[in-house]
Length: 434
Image 1: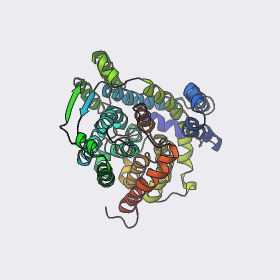
Image 2: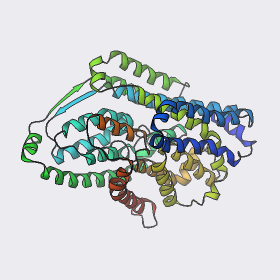
Image 3: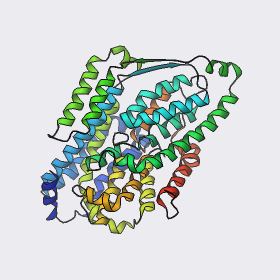
Image 4: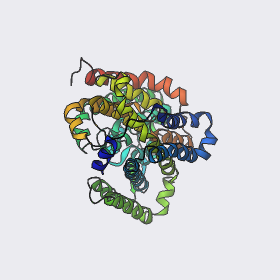
């Protein structure tokens, strides 16, 4: 399909600037509506997605007469949602029951292992699977910073090693980035970022532990027990991971993922789903919202490719910060694609057909965009899908979590932003060490 897509776009002029409006409106709706008009958004978010997406799709079909691009985008959307949904369903069939010690070193070990797991089942799947055990093992002294660092690490930064890890990277995989390319080129930034955040957490958690009353410390140093339910879902998880590498025939990969998810749903005991408080509502919301995002992105990505030079972006450091800051303020998946399209435009290449040429000549730029999107997705609750989900689960468990601005002012700006600044200096500046 990529060859037909390339041929279909050669004769078409770039879309006009007004075609960016539905894309901008979709991103602003995602960012602001849950904060300003929460109940309206919960009832009508799917209509926002359908209406705004239809504007861009209709323009592409009936004004630009580019049905091939719409079909190509539809294929990418199906692949994206099937991967996200299947991992979510399978992860929801695994239950971890933990009792016992939440000493600082055990918490660090838990977060470190969770940071690896996030690359295997995605930040969304890992967040849903591990947030409840995390709360239970810290139940005697759990505070807002426990939830915030879980979001920093498990829901965002840790997912930087595979396309499965974080939605932006899977979008890159669908555009042609080889599966192992991210791990080969981002692992150093991942080690530094995860290591710094774990060290900061260890320091804060040690202070928290020392301030806890003696009875609490005694309870948390008691013998620890772990129990796992639904381990048969490991087979279905393996099937999903293996299917990532299946490219032909079309939709076979997606069929395997759907089959694994359905088998997991049917064979997982109801008691495990109930223990996990499992519901398909988060996947439903993601599916509708990304329907709008994928639709509105069609002319927007073309426009950004054609007018990349006017954005004033030059070099990895600028792409890192531009992608990162907007990923925190909006949503990191469409932001990743927007700046990737701009980078391709500066290189004079087509995003849908020239990934090998781009990686050969501009690989460091993609590293900057990837790390910026993944790391900065933790700057706000709206930067990445799992963030709000984790917050909601913690609040249902009666954990006091910071509000939207409290999260930014008390945690993201004083803790995460300096870490991201150091990552930028070490890896993307003129003074880089790596």
